Image (tube, rainbow, N blue to C red; front, side):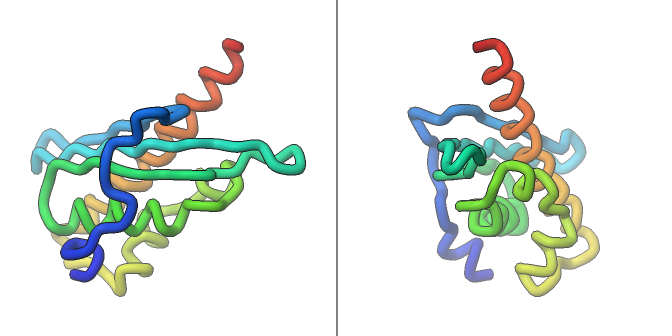
Length: 122
């Protein structure tokens, strides 16, 4: 409940390097994950991350948690964060809300994928 009542890293990032999006048409939840990447010692690091989520308390909490789990990690590490990592970090979710942790992980992966695709074009 803490990540719902006091979400971390919430809000649109105006100068994001990439924005990941994922939604669930069944429940109506929609998540945007904004990432800012910097290179350090030849590694791509998630320097900043934020989110906008339109959905239930679980969707907001999982979005908040994934930003906490990913911030400061190498992209190769962040892309491996799973829904189980998110749910476990929140001390579990009700079974009916586990899909929210999938949405958060998928939105993060989408942001990283878009960042990498944009970088290849440069």
